[in-house]
Length: 490
Ligand SMILES: Nc1ncnc2c1ncn2[C@@H]1O[C@H](COP(=O)(O)OP(=O)(O)OP(=O)(O)O)[C@@H](O)[C@H]1O
Ligand SMILES: [Mg+2]
Image (cartoon, rainbow, N blue to C red; front, top):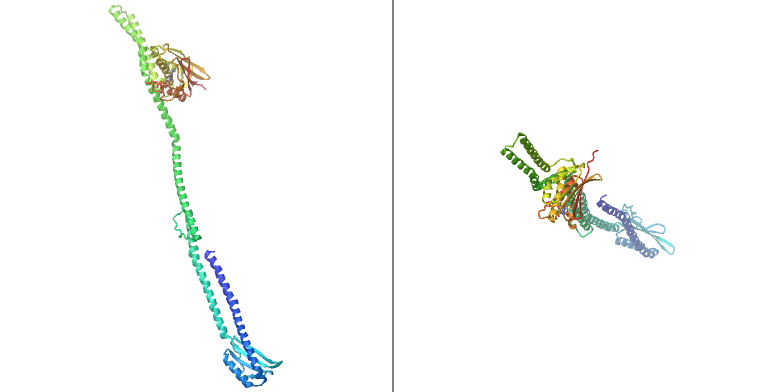
């Protein structure tokens, strides 16, 4: 049921009840009381008239009685009929010849009978017919006016109530309900009723505040959802490409390592040219000797086909040896892209071969104890490069400290399924302070040092060959250890 109906129904009910009370009880009661009052007054009047008639009746002065009653009737127009009978019910007034009063259709006609007695003597009865209509009509008119006023007031109260209800409560509440529905559909731009100072105004005010905070909250939420979606999308894309990117990055790193190692090997080229020159010095001298011998033989005619063949054979062997030297160097420089099984002693020997001439030139003694037969898996050339880097560092330490009897010892042994190679020197060792930083890339204490030598050793042994590199100070020098797991055939 609507609010309007809820408020109007009781008002209507009150109206009906009031109408019923007015017309069913109050007005009839009031008319009855009026009638009773009138009759009472008439009765009193009649009493005094009857009392005045007593002496006239006792004295049988009927003509005066007639006069009096006629005058009385004239004076009271509402008294439509006055009748006087004597003790034997004989009519004295009006004269018996006069017509008895007709039964009147007037419902407001009342008849009063007043017995007249004196000292227990019945003198007669005075009867009066009274027309109450004019008096009662007056009362009825007043009552109707009163009822009309009451109904008008009730109607005004109802109209004012309905008006107030409509404009102060129902419309704002209706608008609020509408706004709530729109709010539920996330429409925040609904028009709200004006904010008054009454309770409905307070309600509208709180609703507006609620709507504003909801709007802000909704905007924040949308913003957050968008951000989260974007982040999720980015994450999804990242995830999709992550594996590929990791693989690419790994491949790129590996490629970089290879390049670095290759560059470093080229840097050792100077060292090797020096070595080739040294290696070739002896066969070149021999060649020179053979050539001058041949020249002498020719000059002194002592050249025989045998001696010629012998000399040619010696030259051929010397050239072969020189060629082998070149091949050895070429092997060292050949980049190895494939993992293979190789003998650690072979790789060590390659490194030694590259540097031994320089060591000899600097009067550094090299002791080699590298038994063959220890096979590992990895890059042959890289391992040789690692050993060469250690030998070069040892050499530089000895030269740097100007050690007279420079000594380097390289040893290889099997230990718990690993090939363990150590390089010892007597170059004075490494200060404790720099020990933890030794394998960092670009860490160097040398003026010309690039600081990549040991970093590369660590990468080759630990990352590429799953081994381990260690450093320690020993008596007068340093010891570097390369540990690589042995190849296991399954
Ligand atoms: N055997 C050694 N004795 C004393 N110090 C050493 C020895 N080996 C390495 N070091 C120290 O470790 C540092 C780093 O060596 P690393 O081989 O990485 O770089 P570098 O020799 O300085 O330069 P690069 O080898 O790149 O030309 C060296 O500068 C040196 O101070
Ligand atoms: Mg170095």
